[in-house]
Image 1 (cartoon, rainbow, N blue to C red):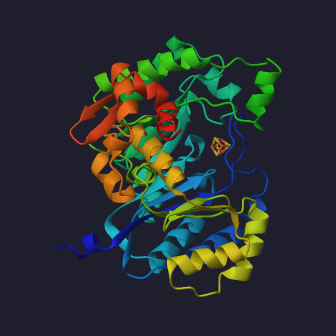
Image 2 (tube, rainbow, N blue to C red):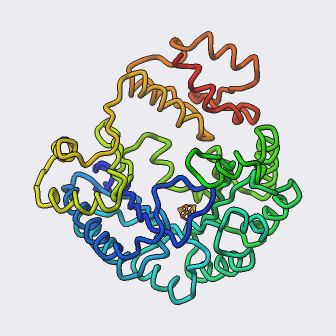
Length: 399
Ligand code: SF4
């Protein structure tokens, strides 16, 4: 029997908080103009990884280097991070190792080096293939550079994911459809398409408040979502999660971990983790992060619980939550409903020792009548119509 199967599978996320410029809609924990910290930051990430080293009872089956813009930093820094992960954890032979990439950073030489250091999946932030739309949101690449970059990556990688955003300022159904048509021609293995969110504190929010730009309202976004669903289905992409489509089962192993409430550790400022039913995220400021790591990394704690306790006591966390039953159920339902397979009633029973159908009999009847939910063996899943109300449905269950 494969010994890997006996081990506890975990995912690792590495947050690289550097960007060349800030996109107008972005509320991620990323910074411009602090490139002078990159080298010291890499040392801190490596130290944090070492602090977290786990014994052989754990095995890493997905690594996601995101941000920020990891493709913006030197290959040598990425290589140091990957080497450290390899020496601190057991890594599965079939692990997925993803690098988030911005189109303007792609060259043939870099693509070759990314592959050489162990990257086997690329997630490229295209957002749109319309130059006017890209300019308004302050992306640094053009549509033609985006296409060229994917073509270069395809020479080296078979697993390429493309990120799109719909509901952008000045975007019409026609221009969005053109973006979809052109993306399909390049045939990526995976597509994520997200509805534009206007988040507080972003430049886009200011622009919208000042009425300088108009973004899609809920109805228009819903229409664009329906177009995406139909178009990608017609082109053989499976909508395995609300905002994600993939060909030939090339689902993102890493993202599935989040949606299935499986454990993962996040390294770097603001990175989130879920281990031993506890959720926590690292302090957000890169400078404070670098400073804090110097104090803690030499401490050798063996057990996961001890590590979390130590980090908590040493003010390393921005947010820490030990989940109560209601929160755990809400999270489980919210995440399960995002997946095409839906809510697994057997998993619900084993996780919470409760019978899903007995607990929510009346609510389930209501959702069936309204054609929001459907049943498939032991799974309850959203209908196409229901996918527009995923969070509302989950919230209603635990009210
Ligand atoms: S490149 Fe990505 S992380 Fe950086 S500012 Fe733009 S959206 Fe945010």
